[in-house]
Amino acid sequence: MGVAPLADGDLLDINDVAPRLRGNTPLWLYILREAEVAADGLRLGPAGGRIVAEVFIGLLRMDSESQLSAEPGWRPVLPSRAGGGDFRMVDLLIEAGVDPETRGE
Image (cartoon, rainbow, N blue to C red; front, top):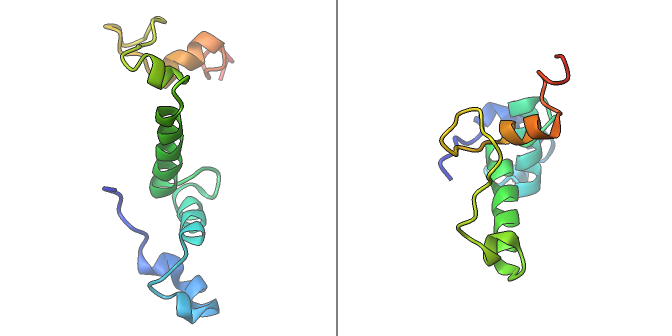
């Protein structure tokens, strides 16, 4: 995946409670710990986020009626801050009026 694994120290308390999990942490537990280490549990970490994203992309590709399947070359046409058609998530947030600048943050 190109993602650095958690350090052994990040899993010590889990291994202390359940020694049989040492080096064999279940994926769901690893993803929860990764989220805790990477973002204080507020969002997924790199491995967990990638797994979720790949599942969504796979589902969209399998659905013949999804935008991704119906028009694979489609690109957003909203204005972008970067210009040149390089549309990013921040551009969507600005368009929706929920970006920090629009909200006065």
